[in-house]
Image 1 (cartoon, chains in turn purple, cyan):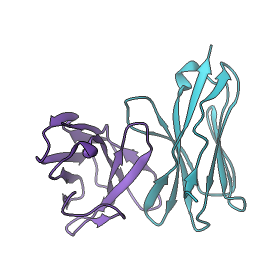
Image 2 (cartoon, one colour):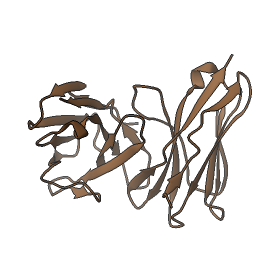
Image 3 (cartoon, helix red, strand yellow):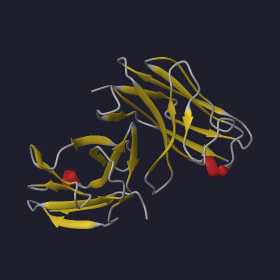
Image 4 (tube, chains in turn purple, green):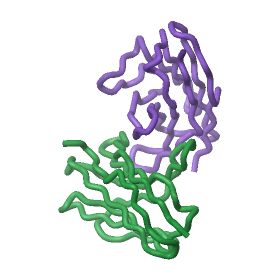
Length: 114
Length: 109
């Protein structure tokens, strides 16, 4: 299984600012994803992070709000831009070795926007 | 209709009993099925995955898949208080995991 780390683990931010979350995997993986989990809710896929190209966003999520980078097979970042209190959530990085195989999750980043 | 449906619970079972968690999905093209356990304040932890119809056992856990009925379940034998958590069913079609809302399991001593 892949071991995934995220930074920061939590942050409290002011409205209108941006936060970049980093995700590092301990081995080369094919697939990397970003999810959001709002309080008491299940996981919602934000986007698939593609190495060396633009991320693939799910319905309701746009690049201007959630720019994503993936410069190599083991690292990705998610930026939450121009934050509002509605962006308060847990953001989770996930990775897998192939489209058919299991996915593992990082510990998450707990974001609070005031 | 939601893509992946689970009863939110809570499902309460006594210690030592079998807990049965159920999940239905809408997309017949779904290829693989996953069960995650999530403790409060923690990220999801993979328990099992299943691709083929039938049963798959791993220790105290058994996953069951019935593609004709679009139904997948997780049985936990000899339930322990430490099994108390939210169990998330996830379905994969192509390369994306779609999650259900989760079932909260409570195992009481």
